[in-house]
Length: 336
Image 1 (cartoon, rainbow, N blue to C red):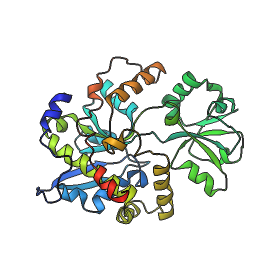
Image 2 (image 1 turned 90 degrees about the horizontal axis):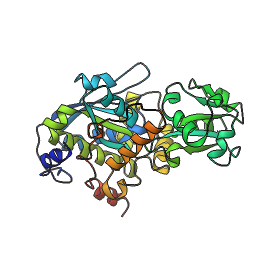
Image 3 (image 1 turned 135 degrees about the vertical axis):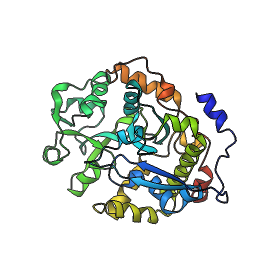
């Protein structure tokens, strides 16, 4: 399928010209949570007219605590879905759900462990913590890998209900964190923390991946390409250019957000290299390595996170729409 896809889109240019004329195709994109800086590239492309230049009329449907956008993609209610990480995509393939990853907008998963500043000097020292706050879903995702790879113990686990009070009041406690969220919340409460990004210790999944339906990828690859390219441009403008218009729409969609929080989240995204690092420096934002997908699949199987060791990884993700250097010229205008 990979070769067929590449042949189907071989005639497309690396970046579609703003002067190209398209009838606007209506696209609905679902996100994985309330509007935030982690969705900035999508909001930027919407706000500054990039999607329109690429012939797209895009609507962003927020996720959130009471919203489950995942089934909406397979059901045809969404055209693209911003999802969490590759584990979810492995699950889709294992359950014959016909969706596929077409771009990876976080090269590093923001999942992390945090500790009070200076209490634990190294990542390995965290295995000595008397207790680690881990949410139920994480107990079945990255926690088995931590046990298998580093010697963390199930006896350390305490349930994390997304309330930081226990952690803030116990200097020896460690807890899971989203690197652009809990560390900032702790700092607001006057507690300095050390953040240990799991990605920096071998947890190699992509995150903030974009999934599309298999039938769209096969039957309308040109539309998929336009959406991916426009979003890549959006991310470059959001990270390195004037992001004020994106902020306006994010704040409208999520009134509980603030400009200060958006600034702090955006700074963390850049500081940690979540979007633009590794392969993206030469291949462009959104890059996918199928070797890396294979590597993470092996990690998940070896850790017992994924049971099936015979998935067809060509159904999990494709690199046919990325790795073309799209957006590098835009980035260069901000960083000559």
